[in-house]
Image (cartoon, rainbow, N blue to C red; front, side, top):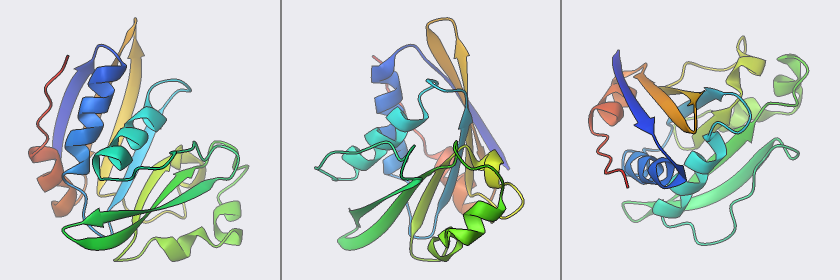
Amino acid sequence: MLRKTVYLQNEADTIALGASLAKTLKPGMKIYLYGDLGSGKTTLVRAMLQAAGYEDNVKSPTYALAEHYTINLAGTPTELVHFDFFRLENPEEFMEAGFSEYFNDNTICIVEWPEKAVDVLPQADIEGIFLIIGEGRRAKFYGRTEIGAQAIGTLCVEFH
Protein backbone atom coordinates (compact mmCIF):
# COMPACT_ATOMS: atom_id res chain seq x y z
CA MET A 1 0.00 0.00 0.00
CA LEU A 2 1.25 3.45 -0.88
CA ARG A 3 0.10 6.59 0.93
CA LYS A 4 0.33 10.26 -0.02
CA THR A 5 -0.91 13.26 1.94
CA VAL A 6 -1.38 16.74 0.47
CA TYR A 7 -2.61 20.00 1.95
CA LEU A 8 -5.09 21.86 -0.22
CA GLN A 9 -5.21 25.57 0.61
CA ASN A 10 -8.10 26.39 -1.70
CA GLU A 11 -10.35 25.19 -4.49
CA ALA A 12 -7.61 25.78 -7.09
CA ASP A 13 -5.42 23.25 -5.25
CA THR A 14 -8.25 20.71 -5.31
CA ILE A 15 -8.67 21.28 -9.04
CA ALA A 16 -4.93 20.79 -9.60
CA LEU A 17 -5.08 17.53 -7.63
CA GLY A 18 -8.05 16.37 -9.72
CA ALA A 19 -6.16 17.14 -12.92
CA SER A 20 -3.22 15.08 -11.69
CA LEU A 21 -5.48 12.17 -10.70
CA ALA A 22 -7.19 12.28 -14.10
CA LYS A 23 -3.85 11.39 -15.72
CA THR A 24 -3.77 8.13 -13.72
CA LEU A 25 -7.25 6.87 -14.67
CA LYS A 26 -7.50 3.40 -16.14
CA PRO A 27 -10.55 1.35 -17.16
CA GLY A 28 -11.96 -0.58 -14.23
CA MET A 29 -10.48 1.67 -11.52
CA LYS A 30 -12.41 2.09 -8.32
CA ILE A 31 -11.82 5.30 -6.34
CA TYR A 32 -13.57 5.81 -2.99
CA LEU A 33 -13.73 9.26 -1.42
CA TYR A 34 -14.44 9.86 2.26
CA GLY A 35 -15.03 13.17 4.01
CA ASP A 36 -17.60 15.48 5.51
CA LEU A 37 -20.03 17.55 3.47
CA GLY A 38 -18.17 20.40 1.82
CA SER A 39 -14.75 18.78 2.13
CA GLY A 40 -14.02 18.84 -1.63
CA LYS A 41 -14.96 15.38 -2.89
CA THR A 42 -17.29 16.55 -5.68
CA THR A 43 -14.92 19.38 -6.64
CA LEU A 44 -12.16 16.79 -7.05
CA VAL A 45 -14.33 14.56 -9.26
CA ARG A 46 -15.48 17.51 -11.37
CA ALA A 47 -11.84 18.51 -11.90
CA MET A 48 -10.92 14.94 -12.84
CA LEU A 49 -13.68 14.75 -15.43
CA GLN A 50 -12.83 18.13 -16.94
CA ALA A 51 -9.12 17.28 -17.08
CA ALA A 52 -10.04 14.00 -18.79
CA GLY A 53 -11.74 16.01 -21.53
CA TYR A 54 -15.38 15.94 -20.44
CA GLU A 55 -16.77 19.27 -21.64
CA ASP A 56 -20.40 19.30 -20.51
CA ASN A 57 -21.82 20.15 -17.11
CA VAL A 58 -20.69 17.87 -14.27
CA LYS A 59 -23.52 17.43 -11.77
CA SER A 60 -23.32 16.23 -8.22
CA PRO A 61 -25.00 12.81 -7.99
CA THR A 62 -26.40 13.51 -4.50
CA TYR A 63 -30.04 13.07 -5.54
CA ALA A 64 -29.66 10.76 -8.55
CA LEU A 65 -27.10 8.60 -6.64
CA ALA A 66 -25.17 8.07 -9.90
CA GLU A 67 -24.13 10.20 -12.87
CA HIS A 68 -22.72 8.61 -16.04
CA TYR A 69 -19.99 10.14 -18.19
CA THR A 70 -17.92 9.07 -21.18
CA ILE A 71 -14.30 10.19 -21.20
CA ASN A 72 -11.52 9.48 -23.65
CA LEU A 73 -8.58 7.45 -22.31
CA ALA A 74 -5.74 6.99 -24.80
CA GLY A 75 -8.17 7.37 -27.69
CA THR A 76 -10.71 4.92 -26.26
CA PRO A 77 -14.15 6.06 -25.03
CA THR A 78 -14.43 4.92 -21.40
CA GLU A 79 -17.44 5.03 -19.11
CA LEU A 80 -17.01 6.71 -15.75
CA VAL A 81 -19.76 6.53 -13.14
CA HIS A 82 -19.73 9.01 -10.26
CA PHE A 83 -21.70 7.73 -7.28
CA ASP A 84 -22.81 9.59 -4.16
CA PHE A 85 -24.15 7.24 -1.49
CA PHE A 86 -24.89 9.91 1.14
CA ARG A 87 -28.62 9.19 0.91
CA LEU A 88 -28.36 5.38 1.08
CA GLU A 89 -30.06 4.01 4.16
CA ASN A 90 -28.31 0.63 4.06
CA PRO A 91 -25.94 -1.38 1.81
CA GLU A 92 -28.81 -3.47 0.41
CA GLU A 93 -30.05 -0.39 -1.47
CA PHE A 94 -26.80 -0.51 -3.48
CA MET A 95 -27.60 -4.06 -4.58
CA GLU A 96 -31.29 -3.34 -5.23
CA ALA A 97 -30.38 -0.38 -7.46
CA GLY A 98 -28.20 -2.66 -9.62
CA PHE A 99 -25.09 -0.56 -9.08
CA SER A 100 -22.86 -3.62 -8.75
CA GLU A 101 -22.97 -4.13 -12.55
CA TYR A 102 -20.86 -0.99 -13.04
CA PHE A 103 -17.97 -2.32 -10.95
CA ASN A 104 -16.29 -4.21 -13.78
CA ASP A 105 -13.01 -4.21 -15.71
CA ASN A 106 -14.13 -1.49 -18.13
CA THR A 107 -15.97 1.15 -16.10
CA ILE A 108 -14.25 3.65 -13.82
CA CYS A 109 -16.25 4.04 -10.61
CA ILE A 110 -15.75 6.97 -8.27
CA VAL A 111 -17.76 6.74 -5.05
CA GLU A 112 -18.46 9.45 -2.51
CA TRP A 113 -19.61 8.18 0.90
CA PRO A 114 -18.55 4.56 0.25
CA GLU A 115 -18.99 3.78 3.94
CA LYS A 116 -22.75 3.65 3.26
CA ALA A 117 -22.21 0.49 1.16
CA VAL A 118 -19.11 -0.88 2.85
CA ASP A 119 -20.17 -4.53 2.96
CA VAL A 120 -21.11 -4.76 -0.72
CA LEU A 121 -18.51 -2.68 -2.53
CA PRO A 122 -15.47 -4.37 -4.08
CA GLN A 123 -12.03 -3.33 -2.90
CA ALA A 124 -10.99 0.18 -3.90
CA ASP A 125 -7.89 0.81 -5.96
CA ILE A 126 -7.59 4.25 -4.37
CA GLU A 127 -9.13 5.60 -1.19
CA GLY A 128 -9.09 9.34 -0.53
CA ILE A 129 -9.93 10.91 2.81
CA PHE A 130 -10.66 14.64 2.97
CA LEU A 131 -10.36 16.48 6.27
CA ILE A 132 -11.35 20.12 6.72
CA ILE A 133 -8.46 21.94 8.40
CA GLY A 134 -9.29 25.61 9.01
CA GLU A 135 -9.90 27.16 5.60
CA GLY A 136 -8.08 24.36 3.77
CA ARG A 137 -8.25 20.60 3.39
CA ARG A 138 -5.89 17.75 4.08
CA ALA A 139 -6.31 14.94 1.57
CA LYS A 140 -4.82 11.52 2.29
CA PHE A 141 -4.70 9.02 -0.54
CA TYR A 142 -4.08 5.30 -0.20
CA GLY A 143 -3.20 2.99 -3.06
CA ARG A 144 -4.98 -0.24 -2.04
CA THR A 145 -4.05 -2.27 -5.13
CA GLU A 146 -1.06 -2.30 -7.45
CA ILE A 147 -2.90 -0.08 -9.94
CA GLY A 148 -3.90 2.28 -7.14
CA ALA A 149 -0.38 2.43 -5.69
CA GLN A 150 1.05 3.21 -9.14
CA ALA A 151 -1.47 6.01 -9.56
CA ILE A 152 -0.74 7.50 -6.13
CA GLY A 153 2.98 7.24 -6.80
CA THR A 154 2.70 9.35 -9.94
CA LEU A 155 0.59 12.16 -8.47
CA CYS A 156 2.28 15.42 -9.28
CA VAL A 157 0.51 18.50 -8.04
CA GLU A 158 1.52 22.11 -8.46
CA PHE A 159 -0.46 24.21 -6.04
CA HIS A 160 -1.47 27.83 -6.58
